[in-house]
Figure (cartoon, rainbow over the protein chains, first blue to last red):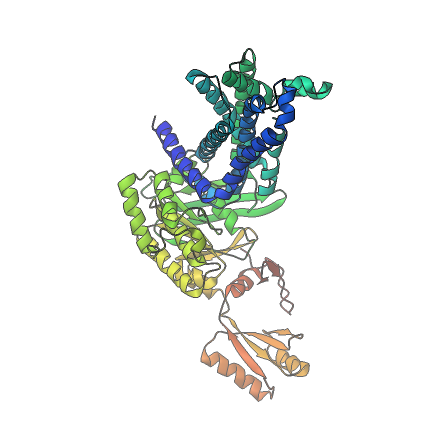
Length: 265
Length: 333
Protein backbone atom coordinates (compact mmCIF):
# COMPACT_ATOMS: atom_id res chain seq x y z
CA UNK A 1 0.00 0.00 0.00
CA UNK A 2 2.76 2.43 0.92
CA UNK A 3 4.50 1.56 -2.34
CA UNK A 4 1.40 2.66 -4.23
CA UNK A 5 1.16 5.82 -2.14
CA UNK A 6 4.80 6.64 -2.90
CA UNK A 7 4.27 5.95 -6.59
CA UNK A 8 1.36 8.36 -6.69
CA UNK A 9 3.20 10.97 -4.66
CA UNK A 10 6.37 10.71 -6.80
CA UNK A 11 4.37 10.88 -10.01
CA UNK A 12 2.59 13.99 -8.76
CA UNK A 13 5.91 15.63 -7.97
CA UNK A 14 7.20 14.78 -11.44
CA UNK A 15 3.97 16.07 -13.01
CA UNK A 16 4.45 19.40 -11.25
CA UNK A 17 8.01 19.50 -12.54
CA UNK A 18 6.86 18.86 -16.11
CA UNK A 19 4.10 21.45 -15.97
CA UNK A 20 6.65 24.01 -14.77
CA UNK A 21 8.87 23.04 -17.69
CA UNK A 22 6.00 23.67 -20.13
CA UNK A 23 5.39 27.09 -18.61
CA UNK A 24 9.08 28.03 -18.58
CA UNK A 25 9.61 26.87 -22.15
CA UNK A 26 6.52 28.46 -23.71
CA UNK A 27 7.82 28.91 -27.27
CA UNK A 28 7.56 25.20 -27.98
CA UNK A 29 4.10 24.89 -26.41
CA UNK A 30 2.86 27.88 -28.39
CA UNK A 31 4.22 26.48 -31.63
CA UNK A 32 2.68 23.05 -31.08
CA UNK A 33 -0.69 24.49 -30.04
CA UNK A 34 -0.54 27.07 -32.82
CA UNK A 35 -0.03 24.63 -35.68
CA UNK A 36 -3.56 23.15 -35.66
CA UNK A 37 -5.06 26.65 -35.42
CA UNK A 38 -3.09 27.79 -38.47
CA UNK A 39 -4.21 24.66 -40.33
CA UNK A 40 -7.80 25.28 -39.26
CA UNK A 41 -7.73 28.79 -40.74
CA UNK A 42 -5.95 27.53 -43.85
CA UNK A 43 -8.39 24.73 -44.51
CA UNK A 44 -11.52 26.71 -43.76
CA UNK A 45 -10.65 29.94 -45.55
CA UNK A 46 -8.28 28.85 -48.32
CA UNK A 47 -9.51 25.38 -49.25
CA UNK A 48 -12.87 25.56 -47.51
CA UNK A 49 -14.93 27.01 -50.34
CA UNK A 50 -13.95 24.28 -52.74
CA UNK A 51 -14.14 21.49 -50.17
CA UNK A 52 -17.52 22.68 -48.94
CA UNK A 53 -18.84 22.21 -52.47
CA UNK A 54 -17.29 18.72 -52.46
CA UNK A 55 -19.48 17.85 -49.47
CA UNK A 56 -22.51 18.85 -51.52
CA UNK A 57 -23.07 21.99 -49.46
CA UNK A 58 -23.58 25.52 -50.68
CA UNK A 59 -20.16 26.98 -50.38
CA UNK A 60 -20.49 29.07 -47.20
CA UNK A 61 -17.82 26.88 -45.62
CA UNK A 62 -19.87 26.02 -42.55
CA UNK A 63 -20.48 22.41 -43.57
CA UNK A 64 -16.77 21.87 -44.19
CA UNK A 65 -15.89 23.61 -40.92
CA UNK A 66 -18.11 21.14 -39.06
CA UNK A 67 -16.53 18.29 -41.01
CA UNK A 68 -12.90 19.28 -40.47
CA UNK A 69 -12.86 20.09 -36.73
CA UNK A 70 -12.46 16.44 -35.63
CA UNK A 71 -9.55 16.07 -38.06
CA UNK A 72 -7.88 19.12 -36.56
CA UNK A 73 -8.45 17.83 -33.04
CA UNK A 74 -6.33 14.84 -34.06
CA UNK A 75 -3.73 17.16 -35.58
CA UNK A 76 -3.66 18.83 -32.15
CA UNK A 77 -2.84 15.46 -30.56
CA UNK A 78 -0.20 14.62 -33.15
CA UNK A 79 1.38 18.04 -32.82
CA UNK A 80 1.43 18.02 -29.01
CA UNK A 81 3.08 14.61 -28.73
CA UNK A 82 5.98 15.90 -30.77
CA UNK A 83 6.65 18.13 -27.76
CA UNK A 84 6.45 15.10 -25.47
CA UNK A 85 9.10 13.33 -27.47
CA UNK A 86 11.38 16.38 -27.39
CA UNK A 87 10.92 16.91 -23.65
CA UNK A 88 11.64 13.25 -22.86
CA UNK A 89 14.75 13.23 -25.03
CA UNK A 90 15.94 16.48 -23.45
CA UNK A 91 15.41 15.03 -20.01
CA UNK A 92 17.33 11.87 -20.83
CA UNK A 93 20.35 13.82 -22.01
CA UNK A 94 20.45 15.92 -18.82
CA UNK A 95 22.28 14.99 -15.64
CA UNK A 96 19.24 15.13 -13.40
CA UNK A 97 17.94 11.78 -14.66
CA UNK A 98 21.02 10.11 -13.22
CA UNK A 99 20.28 11.82 -9.94
CA UNK A 100 16.73 10.44 -9.98
CA UNK A 101 18.11 6.98 -10.67
CA UNK A 102 20.27 7.08 -7.56
CA UNK A 103 17.27 7.98 -5.41
CA UNK A 104 14.73 5.60 -3.92
CA UNK A 105 11.81 6.88 -5.98
CA UNK A 106 9.14 5.06 -7.95
CA UNK A 107 10.99 4.15 -11.11
CA UNK A 108 8.31 4.93 -13.66
CA UNK A 109 7.38 8.26 -12.04
CA UNK A 110 9.69 10.20 -14.34
CA UNK A 111 7.79 8.88 -17.36
CA UNK A 112 4.39 9.13 -15.67
CA UNK A 113 5.11 12.81 -15.02
CA UNK A 114 5.81 13.37 -18.70
CA UNK A 115 2.69 11.49 -19.77
CA UNK A 116 0.33 13.33 -17.42
CA UNK A 117 1.92 16.70 -18.23
CA UNK A 118 1.53 16.09 -21.95
CA UNK A 119 -2.04 14.90 -21.52
CA UNK A 120 -2.95 18.14 -19.78
CA UNK A 121 -1.16 20.13 -22.47
CA UNK A 122 -2.91 18.22 -25.26
CA UNK A 123 -6.35 18.65 -23.73
CA UNK A 124 -5.67 22.36 -23.23
CA UNK A 125 -4.66 22.60 -26.90
CA UNK A 126 -7.95 20.97 -27.88
CA UNK A 127 -9.96 23.36 -25.74
CA UNK A 128 -8.24 26.29 -27.45
CA UNK A 129 -8.85 24.82 -30.90
CA UNK A 130 -12.51 24.19 -30.18
CA UNK A 131 -12.80 27.74 -28.88
CA UNK A 132 -11.35 29.13 -32.12
CA UNK A 133 -13.59 26.83 -34.16
CA UNK A 134 -16.64 28.11 -32.32
CA UNK A 135 -15.48 31.63 -33.06
CA UNK A 136 -15.41 30.74 -36.77
CA UNK A 137 -18.93 29.41 -36.64
CA UNK A 138 -18.52 25.73 -35.73
CA UNK A 139 -21.69 24.29 -34.26
CA UNK A 140 -22.27 20.88 -32.73
CA UNK A 141 -25.54 19.08 -32.29
CA UNK A 142 -24.05 17.01 -29.45
CA UNK A 143 -25.39 17.31 -25.95
CA UNK A 144 -23.32 16.96 -22.79
CA UNK A 145 -23.06 13.14 -23.05
CA UNK A 146 -21.90 13.43 -26.66
CA UNK A 147 -19.24 15.98 -25.74
CA UNK A 148 -18.08 13.92 -22.77
CA UNK A 149 -17.82 10.83 -24.94
CA UNK A 150 -15.90 12.75 -27.60
CA UNK A 151 -13.50 14.17 -25.01
CA UNK A 152 -13.08 10.70 -23.51
CA UNK A 153 -12.27 9.23 -26.92
CA UNK A 154 -9.76 11.99 -27.66
CA UNK A 155 -8.16 11.67 -24.22
CA UNK A 156 -7.77 7.92 -24.62
CA UNK A 157 -6.20 8.28 -28.05
CA UNK A 158 -3.95 11.10 -26.79
CA UNK A 159 -2.86 8.88 -23.92
CA UNK A 160 -1.85 6.18 -26.43
CA UNK A 161 0.06 8.54 -28.71
CA UNK A 162 1.76 10.22 -25.75
CA UNK A 163 3.15 6.87 -24.57
CA UNK A 164 4.27 6.25 -28.14
CA UNK A 165 6.00 9.64 -28.16
CA UNK A 166 7.64 8.86 -24.80
CA UNK A 167 9.03 5.64 -26.28
CA UNK A 168 10.22 7.49 -29.40
CA UNK A 169 11.86 10.12 -27.21
CA UNK A 170 13.63 7.40 -25.23
CA UNK A 171 14.68 5.57 -28.38
CA UNK A 172 16.08 8.71 -30.00
CA UNK A 173 19.82 9.13 -29.82
CA UNK A 174 19.51 12.93 -29.89
CA UNK A 175 16.94 15.64 -29.27
CA UNK A 176 16.88 16.38 -33.03
CA UNK A 177 15.85 12.81 -33.86
CA UNK A 178 13.24 12.97 -31.12
CA UNK A 179 11.72 16.06 -32.68
CA UNK A 180 11.66 14.61 -36.21
CA UNK A 181 10.39 11.05 -35.75
CA UNK A 182 6.90 11.84 -34.42
CA UNK A 183 6.35 14.28 -37.29
CA UNK A 184 4.95 11.41 -39.34
CA UNK A 185 2.01 11.35 -36.93
CA UNK A 186 0.97 14.79 -38.17
CA UNK A 187 0.58 13.37 -41.68
CA UNK A 188 -1.73 10.58 -40.62
CA UNK A 189 -4.92 12.66 -40.17
CA UNK A 190 -4.40 13.81 -43.79
CA UNK A 191 -4.00 10.20 -44.95
CA UNK A 192 -7.32 9.32 -43.34
CA UNK A 193 -10.74 10.80 -42.94
CA UNK A 194 -9.52 13.94 -41.20
CA UNK A 195 -9.88 16.38 -44.08
CA UNK A 196 -11.74 14.63 -46.90
CA UNK A 197 -13.88 11.52 -47.30
CA UNK A 198 -11.72 8.45 -47.87
CA UNK A 199 -13.96 7.46 -50.79
CA UNK A 200 -12.43 10.30 -52.82
CA UNK A 201 -8.95 8.72 -52.58
CA UNK A 202 -7.37 6.36 -55.15
CA UNK A 203 -7.31 2.58 -54.48
CA UNK A 204 -4.22 1.79 -52.39
CA UNK A 205 -4.26 5.02 -50.44
CA UNK A 206 -7.93 4.61 -49.73
CA UNK A 207 -7.37 1.18 -48.21
CA UNK A 208 -4.56 2.52 -46.06
CA UNK A 209 -6.72 5.47 -45.04
CA UNK A 210 -9.60 3.27 -44.03
CA UNK A 211 -7.55 0.89 -41.92
CA UNK A 212 -5.12 3.20 -40.14
CA UNK A 213 -5.92 4.11 -36.52
CA UNK A 214 -6.60 7.82 -37.00
CA UNK A 215 -9.61 7.14 -39.23
CA UNK A 216 -11.87 5.31 -36.76
CA UNK A 217 -10.96 7.84 -34.06
CA UNK A 218 -11.79 10.74 -36.39
CA UNK A 219 -15.05 9.11 -37.44
CA UNK A 220 -16.03 8.37 -33.85
CA UNK A 221 -15.40 11.95 -32.72
CA UNK A 222 -17.13 13.32 -35.82
CA UNK A 223 -20.10 11.09 -35.21
CA UNK A 224 -20.38 12.13 -31.58
CA UNK A 225 -20.10 15.84 -32.37
CA UNK A 226 -22.30 15.99 -35.45
CA UNK A 227 -24.83 13.41 -34.42
CA UNK A 228 -23.91 11.05 -37.27
CA UNK A 229 -23.85 7.31 -36.66
CA UNK A 230 -20.78 6.14 -34.76
CA UNK A 231 -21.30 2.45 -35.39
CA UNK A 232 -18.32 0.11 -35.31
CA UNK A 233 -15.89 3.02 -35.53
CA UNK A 234 -15.90 3.44 -31.76
CA UNK A 235 -14.94 -0.17 -31.15
CA UNK A 236 -12.09 0.03 -33.66
CA UNK A 237 -10.99 3.37 -32.22
CA UNK A 238 -10.94 2.10 -28.65
CA UNK A 239 -9.17 -1.12 -29.69
CA UNK A 240 -6.49 0.84 -31.54
CA UNK A 241 -6.01 3.21 -28.61
CA UNK A 242 -5.69 0.50 -26.00
CA UNK A 243 -3.41 -1.54 -28.25
CA UNK A 244 -1.07 1.37 -29.03
CA UNK A 245 -1.03 2.51 -25.41
CA UNK A 246 -0.15 -0.96 -24.13
CA UNK A 247 2.54 -1.68 -26.71
CA UNK A 248 4.09 1.79 -26.41
CA UNK A 249 4.00 1.62 -22.60
CA UNK A 250 5.84 -1.71 -22.54
CA UNK A 251 8.33 -0.46 -25.12
CA UNK A 252 8.95 2.77 -23.18
CA UNK A 253 9.46 1.01 -19.84
CA UNK A 254 11.86 -1.43 -21.48
CA UNK A 255 13.87 1.39 -23.06
CA UNK A 256 13.89 3.34 -19.80
CA UNK A 257 15.13 0.42 -17.73
CA UNK A 258 17.64 -0.72 -20.29
CA UNK A 259 19.07 2.73 -20.82
CA UNK A 260 21.19 2.38 -17.68
CA UNK A 261 23.19 -0.44 -19.26
CA UNK A 262 24.42 1.74 -22.11
CA UNK A 263 26.50 4.92 -21.97
CA UNK A 264 29.98 3.96 -20.88
CA UNK A 265 30.63 7.11 -18.90
CA UNK B 1 26.68 -9.01 6.04
CA UNK B 2 27.29 -7.90 9.61
CA UNK B 3 24.92 -5.68 11.58
CA UNK B 4 24.28 -2.31 10.04
CA UNK B 5 25.57 -0.22 12.91
CA UNK B 6 29.09 -1.62 12.69
CA UNK B 7 29.13 -2.15 8.94
CA UNK B 8 31.72 0.01 7.17
CA UNK B 9 30.29 2.76 5.00
CA UNK B 10 31.58 1.40 1.72
CA UNK B 11 32.96 -2.04 0.91
CA UNK B 12 33.81 -3.15 -2.63
CA UNK B 13 35.45 -6.51 -3.30
CA UNK B 14 36.94 -7.68 -6.60
CA UNK B 15 34.82 -5.39 -8.71
CA UNK B 16 35.26 -5.93 -12.46
CA UNK B 17 33.59 -4.03 -15.27
CA UNK B 18 34.10 -4.07 -19.03
CA UNK B 19 32.54 -2.00 -21.76
CA UNK B 20 32.68 -4.30 -24.75
CA UNK B 21 36.21 -5.67 -24.88
CA UNK B 22 37.59 -2.77 -22.87
CA UNK B 23 38.31 -3.71 -19.26
CA UNK B 24 37.52 -0.59 -17.25
CA UNK B 25 37.76 -1.95 -13.70
CA UNK B 26 39.99 -4.88 -12.84
CA UNK B 27 39.35 -6.47 -9.42
CA UNK B 28 38.98 -3.21 -7.55
CA UNK B 29 38.87 -3.37 -3.75
CA UNK B 30 37.81 -0.36 -1.68
CA UNK B 31 36.87 0.11 1.95
CA UNK B 32 35.75 3.28 3.67
CA UNK B 33 34.87 3.19 7.35
CA UNK B 34 31.83 5.04 8.53
CA UNK B 35 32.43 8.77 8.88
CA UNK B 36 35.69 8.80 6.94
CA UNK B 37 36.71 10.27 3.62
CA UNK B 38 38.20 7.96 1.01
CA UNK B 39 39.74 9.58 -2.04
CA UNK B 40 39.91 7.73 -5.32
CA UNK B 41 42.80 9.36 -7.13
CA UNK B 42 43.56 8.89 -10.79
CA UNK B 43 43.81 10.52 -14.20
CA UNK B 44 40.97 10.86 -16.71
CA UNK B 45 39.92 7.47 -17.98
CA UNK B 46 41.27 5.56 -14.97
CA UNK B 47 37.79 4.24 -14.14
CA UNK B 48 36.89 6.57 -11.26
CA UNK B 49 33.52 7.63 -12.62
CA UNK B 50 32.63 4.05 -13.56
CA UNK B 51 33.37 2.97 -9.99
CA UNK B 52 31.11 5.72 -8.62
CA UNK B 53 28.35 4.79 -11.07
CA UNK B 54 28.52 1.17 -9.97
CA UNK B 55 28.55 1.99 -6.25
CA UNK B 56 25.62 4.38 -6.67
CA UNK B 57 23.47 1.70 -8.42
CA UNK B 58 23.54 3.45 -11.81
CA UNK B 59 25.23 0.61 -13.68
CA UNK B 60 25.82 -3.00 -12.68
CA UNK B 61 29.28 -4.46 -12.13
CA UNK B 62 30.22 -7.57 -14.13
CA UNK B 63 31.45 -9.31 -10.98
CA UNK B 64 32.44 -8.62 -7.41
CA UNK B 65 30.50 -7.65 -4.32
CA UNK B 66 29.47 -4.19 -3.18
CA UNK B 67 27.94 -3.08 0.10
CA UNK B 68 26.90 0.36 1.27
CA UNK B 69 26.32 0.59 5.03
CA UNK B 70 25.61 -3.12 5.03
CA UNK B 71 23.16 -3.06 2.10
CA UNK B 72 24.01 -5.10 -0.97
CA UNK B 73 24.09 -2.86 -4.05
CA UNK B 74 22.94 -5.71 -6.31
CA UNK B 75 20.17 -7.32 -4.27
CA UNK B 76 18.95 -4.25 -2.37
CA UNK B 77 19.46 -1.24 -4.66
CA UNK B 78 16.54 0.69 -3.16
CA UNK B 79 17.94 0.16 0.33
CA UNK B 80 21.20 1.62 -0.92
CA UNK B 81 19.48 4.50 -2.73
CA UNK B 82 17.70 5.53 0.44
CA UNK B 83 21.08 5.97 2.18
CA UNK B 84 23.26 7.55 -0.46
CA UNK B 85 23.68 10.90 -2.13
CA UNK B 86 25.53 11.38 -5.39
CA UNK B 87 27.01 14.51 -6.89
CA UNK B 88 28.32 13.60 -10.30
CA UNK B 89 30.87 15.25 -12.49
CA UNK B 90 28.19 16.79 -14.67
CA UNK B 91 25.67 19.00 -13.02
CA UNK B 92 22.53 17.15 -12.05
CA UNK B 93 20.26 20.12 -11.54
CA UNK B 94 17.03 21.00 -13.33
CA UNK B 95 17.89 24.01 -15.48
CA UNK B 96 14.30 25.13 -16.00
CA UNK B 97 13.60 25.42 -12.27
CA UNK B 98 14.88 27.89 -9.69
CA UNK B 99 17.32 26.92 -6.94
CA UNK B 100 14.56 26.68 -4.35
CA UNK B 101 12.36 24.62 -6.69
CA UNK B 102 15.23 22.21 -7.29
CA UNK B 103 15.63 21.70 -3.56
CA UNK B 104 11.89 21.32 -3.07
CA UNK B 105 11.84 18.69 -5.81
CA UNK B 106 14.42 16.70 -3.86
CA UNK B 107 12.60 17.19 -0.55
CA UNK B 108 9.35 15.92 -2.11
CA UNK B 109 11.04 12.93 -3.73
CA UNK B 110 12.66 12.08 -0.38
CA UNK B 111 9.15 12.24 1.14
CA UNK B 112 10.23 14.67 3.83
CA UNK B 113 6.78 16.17 4.26
CA UNK B 114 5.87 19.79 3.80
CA UNK B 115 7.23 21.35 7.01
CA UNK B 116 10.36 19.26 7.37
CA UNK B 117 11.09 19.79 3.68
CA UNK B 118 10.76 23.53 3.97
CA UNK B 119 12.98 23.63 7.05
CA UNK B 120 15.66 21.57 5.34
CA UNK B 121 15.48 23.82 2.25
CA UNK B 122 15.99 27.01 4.26
CA UNK B 123 18.83 25.35 6.16
CA UNK B 124 20.63 24.23 3.01
CA UNK B 125 20.14 27.51 1.14
CA UNK B 126 21.76 29.25 4.08
CA UNK B 127 24.56 26.72 4.50
CA UNK B 128 25.46 26.94 0.83
CA UNK B 129 25.11 30.70 0.61
CA UNK B 130 22.29 30.51 -1.91
CA UNK B 131 19.50 32.28 -0.01
CA UNK B 132 19.65 35.41 -2.18
CA UNK B 133 19.63 33.39 -5.40
CA UNK B 134 16.98 30.93 -4.23
CA UNK B 135 14.19 32.22 -6.46
CA UNK B 136 16.31 33.05 -9.47
CA UNK B 137 16.41 30.78 -12.52
CA UNK B 138 19.52 28.62 -12.85
CA UNK B 139 20.54 30.41 -16.04
CA UNK B 140 21.75 33.25 -13.78
CA UNK B 141 23.87 30.95 -11.59
CA UNK B 142 27.67 30.85 -11.81
CA UNK B 143 29.56 27.56 -12.09
CA UNK B 144 30.37 27.60 -8.38
CA UNK B 145 26.76 28.30 -7.42
CA UNK B 146 25.53 25.43 -9.60
CA UNK B 147 28.00 23.09 -7.98
CA UNK B 148 26.91 24.21 -4.52
CA UNK B 149 23.25 23.76 -5.42
CA UNK B 150 24.09 20.34 -6.84
CA UNK B 151 25.65 19.28 -3.55
CA UNK B 152 22.84 20.87 -1.55
CA UNK B 153 20.35 18.77 -3.54
CA UNK B 154 22.38 15.68 -2.71
CA UNK B 155 22.19 16.53 0.99
CA UNK B 156 18.44 17.15 1.20
CA UNK B 157 17.71 13.61 2.40
CA UNK B 158 20.65 13.68 4.86
CA UNK B 159 22.43 10.72 3.25
CA UNK B 160 24.81 8.62 5.35
CA UNK B 161 27.10 7.87 2.42
CA UNK B 162 28.01 10.43 -0.23
CA UNK B 163 29.75 10.00 -3.55
CA UNK B 164 31.44 13.07 -4.95
CA UNK B 165 32.76 12.63 -8.46
CA UNK B 166 35.43 15.28 -9.06
CA UNK B 167 33.55 17.86 -6.99
CA UNK B 168 36.03 20.69 -7.63
CA UNK B 169 36.94 20.17 -11.29
CA UNK B 170 36.36 23.44 -13.11
CA UNK B 171 35.90 25.51 -9.95
CA UNK B 172 37.89 28.64 -9.19
CA UNK B 173 40.28 28.44 -6.20
CA UNK B 174 37.92 30.16 -3.80
CA UNK B 175 34.93 27.96 -4.64
CA UNK B 176 37.27 25.01 -4.33
CA UNK B 177 38.17 25.95 -0.75
CA UNK B 178 34.48 26.44 0.08
CA UNK B 179 33.77 22.97 -1.28
CA UNK B 180 36.58 21.46 0.80
CA UNK B 181 35.19 23.12 3.91
CA UNK B 182 31.75 21.64 3.23
CA UNK B 183 33.18 18.17 2.66
CA UNK B 184 35.13 18.31 5.94
CA UNK B 185 32.03 19.40 7.84
CA UNK B 186 30.05 16.51 6.42
CA UNK B 187 32.67 13.97 7.43
CA UNK B 188 32.89 15.37 10.93
CA UNK B 189 29.11 14.96 11.14
CA UNK B 190 29.62 11.23 10.58
CA UNK B 191 28.91 10.98 6.86
CA UNK B 192 31.01 8.52 4.87
CA UNK B 193 32.41 10.12 1.72
CA UNK B 194 33.94 8.67 -1.39
CA UNK B 195 35.56 11.42 -3.38
CA UNK B 196 37.20 11.08 -6.77
CA UNK B 197 39.82 13.55 -7.83
CA UNK B 198 42.68 14.15 -10.21
CA UNK B 199 44.46 16.37 -7.70
CA UNK B 200 46.84 14.96 -5.14
CA UNK B 201 46.58 18.04 -2.95
CA UNK B 202 42.82 17.65 -2.80
CA UNK B 203 43.10 14.02 -1.72
CA UNK B 204 45.85 15.01 0.71
CA UNK B 205 43.79 17.84 2.21
CA UNK B 206 40.56 15.93 2.65
CA UNK B 207 40.98 12.19 2.76
CA UNK B 208 41.90 9.85 5.58
CA UNK B 209 42.76 7.22 3.00
CA UNK B 210 43.70 7.47 -0.66
CA UNK B 211 43.38 4.76 -3.30
CA UNK B 212 45.26 5.37 -6.53
CA UNK B 213 43.44 4.06 -9.59
CA UNK B 214 45.29 3.56 -12.85
CA UNK B 215 43.76 1.92 -15.91
CA UNK B 216 41.15 0.17 -13.82
CA UNK B 217 43.45 -1.11 -11.10
CA UNK B 218 44.17 0.08 -7.60
CA UNK B 219 47.93 0.53 -7.80
CA UNK B 220 48.45 1.98 -4.34
CA UNK B 221 46.40 2.51 -1.22
CA UNK B 222 47.02 4.03 2.16
CA UNK B 223 46.91 7.14 4.29
CA UNK B 224 48.25 10.30 2.64
CA UNK B 225 51.41 9.99 4.78
CA UNK B 226 51.96 6.36 3.75
CA UNK B 227 51.46 7.21 0.13
CA UNK B 228 53.70 10.22 0.19
CA UNK B 229 56.48 8.19 1.76
CA UNK B 230 56.47 6.16 -1.44
CA UNK B 231 56.93 9.23 -3.59
CA UNK B 232 60.53 10.30 -3.99
CA UNK B 233 59.56 13.80 -2.93
CA UNK B 234 59.17 15.86 -6.04
CA UNK B 235 61.95 17.08 -8.28
CA UNK B 236 64.06 20.01 -9.34
CA UNK B 237 64.23 21.01 -13.00
CA UNK B 238 67.56 22.41 -14.12
CA UNK B 239 67.65 24.41 -17.35
CA UNK B 240 70.95 24.58 -19.28
CA UNK B 241 72.26 26.86 -21.99
CA UNK B 242 73.55 24.05 -24.24
CA UNK B 243 73.46 20.29 -24.83
CA UNK B 244 77.05 19.82 -23.64
CA UNK B 245 76.27 21.22 -20.22
CA UNK B 246 73.16 19.06 -20.03
CA UNK B 247 75.18 15.96 -20.90
CA UNK B 248 77.86 16.58 -18.31
CA UNK B 249 75.27 17.35 -15.65
CA UNK B 250 73.42 14.15 -16.53
CA UNK B 251 76.72 12.26 -16.19
CA UNK B 252 77.21 13.73 -12.77
CA UNK B 253 73.69 12.91 -11.56
CA UNK B 254 72.80 9.37 -12.63
CA UNK B 255 69.37 9.45 -10.98
CA UNK B 256 68.27 12.42 -13.06
CA UNK B 257 66.23 12.35 -16.27
CA UNK B 258 67.54 14.53 -19.14
CA UNK B 259 65.27 16.09 -21.74
CA UNK B 260 67.59 17.02 -24.66
CA UNK B 261 64.86 18.85 -26.58
CA UNK B 262 64.22 21.36 -23.84
CA UNK B 263 67.76 21.25 -22.39
CA UNK B 264 66.29 20.34 -19.04
CA UNK B 265 67.51 17.89 -16.44
CA UNK B 266 64.91 16.61 -14.00
CA UNK B 267 66.53 15.71 -10.68
CA UNK B 268 64.53 13.77 -8.08
CA UNK B 269 64.78 15.73 -4.85
CA UNK B 270 62.62 17.03 -2.06
CA UNK B 271 62.18 20.74 -1.73
CA UNK B 272 64.28 21.23 1.43
CA UNK B 273 66.92 23.94 1.37
CA UNK B 274 69.59 21.41 2.25
CA UNK B 275 69.02 19.12 -0.68
CA UNK B 276 68.90 22.10 -3.00
CA UNK B 277 72.16 23.48 -1.60
CA UNK B 278 73.85 20.10 -1.97
CA UNK B 279 72.74 19.83 -5.57
CA UNK B 280 73.92 23.32 -6.44
CA UNK B 281 77.25 22.78 -4.65
CA UNK B 282 77.86 19.58 -6.58
CA UNK B 283 77.22 21.25 -9.93
CA UNK B 284 79.28 24.28 -8.92
CA UNK B 285 82.27 22.08 -8.02
CA UNK B 286 82.05 20.42 -11.42
CA UNK B 287 81.86 23.90 -13.02
CA UNK B 288 78.55 23.23 -14.73
CA UNK B 289 76.60 26.45 -15.17
CA UNK B 290 72.85 26.33 -14.68
CA UNK B 291 70.77 28.86 -16.53
CA UNK B 292 67.82 28.69 -14.16
CA UNK B 293 65.90 26.15 -12.10
CA UNK B 294 62.42 25.39 -10.87
CA UNK B 295 61.29 23.32 -7.93
CA UNK B 296 58.36 20.92 -8.19
CA UNK B 297 56.60 19.60 -5.14
CA UNK B 298 55.07 16.11 -5.45
CA UNK B 299 51.98 15.99 -7.58
CA UNK B 300 49.79 13.33 -9.09
CA UNK B 301 52.39 12.78 -11.76
CA UNK B 302 54.97 11.87 -9.14
CA UNK B 303 52.60 9.49 -7.38
CA UNK B 304 51.99 7.89 -10.71
CA UNK B 305 55.59 7.63 -11.58
CA UNK B 306 56.32 6.18 -8.17
CA UNK B 307 53.65 3.50 -8.29
CA UNK B 308 53.36 2.70 -11.98
CA UNK B 309 56.69 3.74 -13.47
CA UNK B 310 54.94 5.80 -16.10
CA UNK B 311 53.82 9.37 -16.44
CA UNK B 312 50.47 11.03 -16.76
CA UNK B 313 50.07 13.61 -19.46
CA UNK B 314 46.52 14.75 -19.77
CA UNK B 315 44.49 11.65 -20.29
CA UNK B 316 47.40 9.62 -21.66
CA UNK B 317 49.86 7.58 -19.71
CA UNK B 318 53.25 7.64 -21.38
CA UNK B 319 56.59 6.10 -20.59
CA UNK B 320 59.38 8.32 -19.40
CA UNK B 321 62.09 8.71 -22.05
CA UNK B 322 65.10 8.18 -19.84
CA UNK B 323 67.51 5.64 -18.47
CA UNK B 324 64.88 4.24 -16.12
CA UNK B 325 63.25 1.85 -18.55
CA UNK B 326 60.78 0.63 -15.94
CA UNK B 327 58.14 -1.29 -17.85
CA UNK B 328 54.67 -0.03 -17.23
CA UNK B 329 53.20 -1.58 -14.14
CA UNK B 330 56.57 -2.85 -12.89
CA UNK B 331 55.98 -1.28 -9.52
CA UNK B 332 52.46 -2.60 -9.19
CA UNK B 333 51.77 -4.90 -6.36
